[in-house]
Length: 401
Ligand SMILES: Nc1ncnc2c1ncn2[C@@H]1O[C@H](COP(=O)(O)OP(=O)(O)O)[C@@H](O)[C@H]1O
Ligand SMILES: [Mg+2]
Image (cartoon, rainbow, N blue to C red):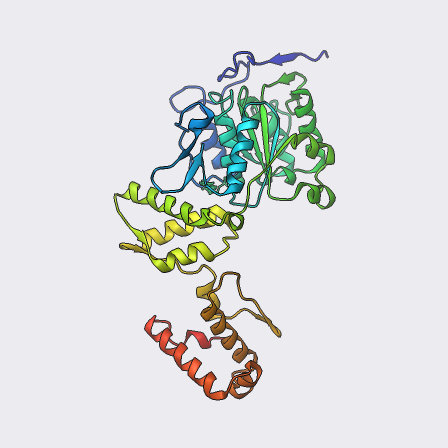
């Protein structure tokens, strides 16, 4: 049987798919918008995790106008959907600007919560494809045996349960951008199919004979180091090189010293504007925001601020995310204990004292000897901690084992 090539209206980068396939309909009977596709896929759990649907970018079209001071938080700059003024972010903005002007495949590398999806959306929004769909797919959330059908579509009857034919994300994203999050999680067999589609711009639907061409720009993301992923996690080297035509690094918050407080103020301002309030951070909250290392990156910071905002009357307090539980229960492992980076000295001392006492089975004489202080000093400290905890309503909690 000869292979027929079905080419969608690439020239016009048409939003609508010119296909003989049944189009998914919205409840109003209209063809799907990106938003509709997003919602549909969110329900099936495959979409990359977006905490909030970002608003469309509404800034000037010239590169200079795109980089702007936010106005709401002094010193905070933004670019597209991204906020941050630190040098590593300025570098990222410059790279986004360069890659957005091209059709190159990009690979965004960064820890979870560093804003990889926002980087991808910003590239899309500043590219010539901005009026066509942006579709985000979380490859790690799709069972491997379904991923091919999800990406490329399938014909009716092509596998058990395929009662209807469906087009895949590559066709949905025609004219636009397909964001493949956690791309390293695909099995090597599926990676071969993806590589082929990237190299030829064509693919077959599962069970189909028609060669389909779709005009899609692919942006991929991973939270693994790609070279390690090739060595240890089954990422194909050829696919890695094909994806990483233009690699971008989303920096973790611990490398963005000046941004931590600025971002927190930005999220607080957003919440205040939304709720019509004027809550402010306490001095201690600001200290925590600045000194904690935020291993969950912007996502952790944002969620922490939102949670604290909801709990606050007027002054927003932020407990050191690890400290509260650590002080109650020192993390000891045999002879060693963990003290988190950024722990205030007084708190660290408290943990060491309580941890040592616990390690000595509550024997104060032994603990004092181990700590190199007199028994009297140890008693004084423990007494002070007891008073502190009574004042803050945590009586007795320090002596938990
Ligand atoms: N630079 C940034 N400016 C503003 N918000 C950000 C930034 N980076 C991340 N976020 C927010 O943090 C959360 C996680 O971002 P996301 O792009 O999903 O991260 P990733 O894909 O790297 O896990 C989202 O709510 C996003 O809006
Ligand atoms: Mg993500």
